[in-house]
Image 1 (cartoon, rainbow, N blue to C red):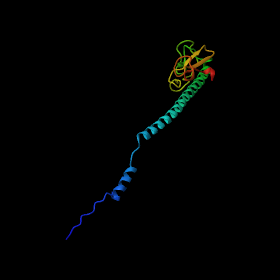
Image 2 (image 1 turned 90 degrees about the vertical axis):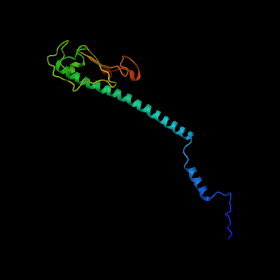
Image 3 (image 1 turned 120 degrees about the vertical axis):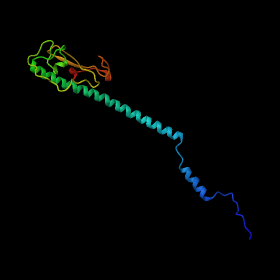
Image 4 (image 1 turned 135 degrees about the vertical axis):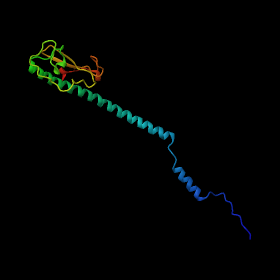
Length: 160
């Protein structure tokens, strides 16, 4: 019996060609594609970040004005009972406990504010000045120092 050897061809079998096509479809991203996506994400994060920080500043100012108004109500109630406002020397502490300095009020009926004394939106104590007839409550803004612009500007009870 005579055996014929299979013919060798230079053709690539169809199965191998199909496998190569599938492997091309499974390729990853190029470095340039990844860099473009990272740049786009960075730009979006920057835009969102600026917007969020502006909202935080607005919220801090709103918190400060609300706390000033609450203190004004408590101080007005103090005045109704005692016929004068707490002096600068007595401070806002007079809303929590009966003053022991200056003119001691006879009709103190406090505390005039519940909980602890509120701070401004940046966590700083309010500045209080009074001669007993008029008063002013101040927040020195984000920097906690008198004067300033934008988020560092002062907020006063006289401006509300």
